[in-house]
Amino acid sequence: MFPFTVKEKHYRVFNERRERRVKAPYLMKHRFAGSEEDWRISNLKDLSPGGMKFWTEKFYPEGSLLQVLLWIPPVDCQVKALGRVVRAVQGKSRDIYYISAAFLEISRGDQEVLKNFIHKLSTLQGAKALVDRSEVAERRLPVMSTAQ
Image 1 (cartoon, rainbow, N blue to C red):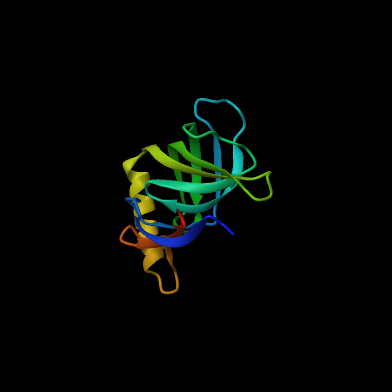
Image 2 (image 1 turned 90 degrees about the vertical axis):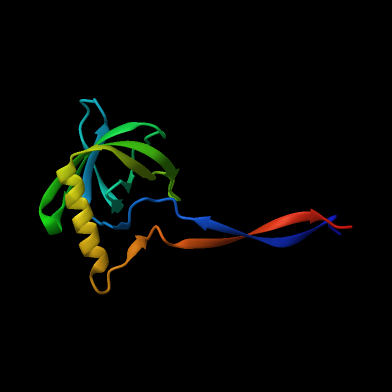
């Protein structure tokens, strides 16, 4: 017999994102900021005016600064930005990393292009935004307590 019981505890988790993000299956280039190394090409996973998520074979530690070049084919535009890695998670296959980066420096014009593109994409019939900042998630976590 176990000396404790399991109960469910509910938490309300608010999305802290400031911007809407959408799926963005496009190619991008990236490298450490200030580096002369060759650009690496990767696939974007999602995109917002404030940042992006992509997967790559190269590990970038949290806090790293990256130069990024995004090509957005539907609007025929290249976006240049400086980003900071806010999360780096190893994939299940162990040779891929999912990198989330926040844009630190991006021109107003490029940011407007992203905002307009994301707004247009999220309002198309059948298109879905991944996260809207008004959404609230509810999580249920087991809580262990000692039996008396």
